[in-house]
Amino acid sequence: MTSSTYAVPRAEVDRLPFEDFYSAEFDRVFDSTFAFSGDRDAAADATQEAFARAFARWRRLSRQEWAGAWVTTTALNVLRRRYRDAARSRLPVDERTSHDAHGRVDLLRALRALPVRQREAAVLFYVADLPLHAVADAMRISDGAVKSHLARAREGLRVNLEERDA
Amino acid sequence: MHDDLKQRLRDEVDAELGTRPPRNLSDVLTRGRSKRLALRLVTTMSMVLLGTALVAGGFWIAGVRSPSTERSPVQPAGENASTPEPTTNETLENEGGPRERYDIVDGEVTFAATYPPWGFDPDWVAESPRTMAALTADLGGIRIVADPLPVGTGCEADAAPADAQAWAERILSDPDIEATEPTPTRIAGVDALQMDLAPAAGASICDSGDEPVLFNSSEQPEGGWRSQIGLWHRYSYRVYLLDVPAGSSRIVAVVVFGFERNFDEVLEAAAPVLDSLEFHAP
Image (cartoon, rainbow over all chains, first blue to last red; front, side, top):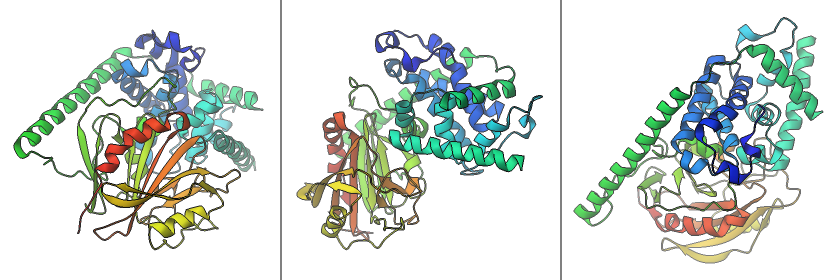
């Protein structure tokens, strides 16, 4: 996630080939979908699907500064739709990935226990590293609402971690 | 605090993932070309069908599509639900695409929209497909809801006002909403009241959403973001309240919204959709 199309000046985005865009944004989108779901295969497929949708409308999308944010949120929506029938507010967590050798994955598991909208805001802001206004635009809510979601998410992370430690 | 949390989450993603899956650009291009072809095919076929219908009957003869089951063939929900604010140079394009027809209240209220710019947004009506319809474009949206319910002071659904005038007065008295005085207008030949709205500073919000709620669906009166129409900050809203002349519904509310700087353009693009509204007896 070293390169961000969101931050690329518009004049440069105008000339961005899709291949370069895919290369620059892949990690951001895949990491976000994986952080959101914990399902490696589903995250990979959602990432590919989102980029395919972007490619189908690249002539128009390539002119936008927010193309990276568009693909990231589209990928999350693909995931949400996939899991909609299973559970509306709680997505499955891959139990195989509960902890690494150093026990460092607690925070990620706590993230996945958050309600969907809080989790979406947290993933877009903390993992995808989108600026606050981009998260607001992607979620179609105000900057203040994003801050509210993030505050609740942080509180939720703290509670989840405390419950796990208890 | 934010930076620390970002770093910790990234570290945990890295630790949990190990290696990332190989990039597969050819798969993306294959899928993307297929989607692009499908979009063009659907557009072309729709144009042919439209032309045939117009030639054969001199008027629109295609069947009414139900928003509860049909999705715009060219605007999947994922993109619609998440399209960020475009840049100022973007415009609401109208390339004369296929005209889709939609209905709510079991066909008693119908309307039509052309893509582009308007695409049906099923995400917004998933819980209220019978009473609510939603269209989105790059710069804004249109929500149409039959017999909406207001939200009470405790965020519960409240009793419905008797008619459009009573609804307008209810909105005017709502401390969470800044509203202009209702002005008479006509939508599709029906008398209506028009008001411009915005969330009031410091407006109270309910847990189910992030903004003051304007309308609740009568189908899902307990709320939930997909059965409500809220007022987001930084958007402009115009609401039309109509006393329904035919059918089982009493009131239809149409909400047109868009980013402030593009709102005139959104209103202009929404006008044909509003003019296409029709009300039918059951």
